[in-house]
Image (cartoon, rainbow, N blue to C red):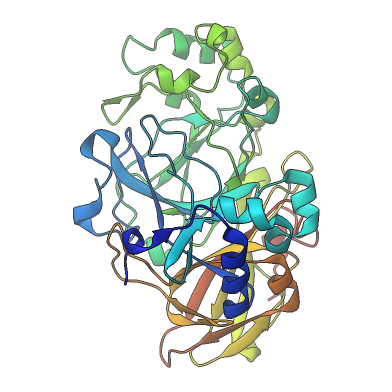
Length: 421
């Protein structure tokens, strides 16, 4: 049995299934791939999804350009399937959503402190993979998202080398606005929505993307992500507003600008401009305040592994999420302790994680089960997870992301300049 669809959906009495899965694996939950299409984007073909399955949701839904990891956040797509964006746990011959597992066993999975504060797993991550750039857009702040009963969305980027053997059509990302840009200039772009290209990129600045680096981006900041495949730890929300009306000749409808704004504000241009964090957008030292490069956790190379911070820093003085990249040398074994629960995806090699197999696939069919994705409970993370590379030639590489305030010892922005290892 190697497909998700052959597994029985467990709708009731999930707790015994969760407890049994955790006991068998050593505090881990195996997850099935979670694919998400976007109707307005062009897939970049680096998710390892079989080419015949790029439009598995139907041509009308658009191509699959995202894979979500350890997600309890529904995808905000029109005409979406009921569980779109939700990760499924694989437990023997049965499956159930990670959201349901956490609803039934929250303290045991994500830890009592996070469960008490949020009542859910409040973050998620994804691979975001497109052939070209996407529209200059922003994600609402918590204040503005609350107006439509949603939550804001800070996010971060890391460009894993294993998924970027090609850069595709435009490996540059526009961030923010040129210093000195006025709100009147931005408003004029909105006024010109139906005239043709509204010219918003003329007000912005593009940065060349580099595999093995990343960015930290707060709510209200305009960005037009480029064509590198991106690992994106972010807050558990799918709100956005597209401020660019034409991308590579494709129209961006006004509805994608205002979809997460109050209906009475859908044509209030001053309000739409006000949703931007203006000072952050025109920051003359934008790169200095947002750019990331990996920082080793410690000097462990002689022990056969290296753990590196790939997402760190604070947004408006708050740590919303962090992420690490663990590389284990061929034949090596290590025990890694973390402060809290995390979602993990394997990007290279094969091995074991406690009592679960890890194997990075070469090609994946739409309904196929894999052995590359895991959710680690807080207790297992704190006790220490044993990672073993069972290959004699290839490194085992995994990315894992954490929830809010889990890693107070994480580096500050700019720490990569003082890297000691």
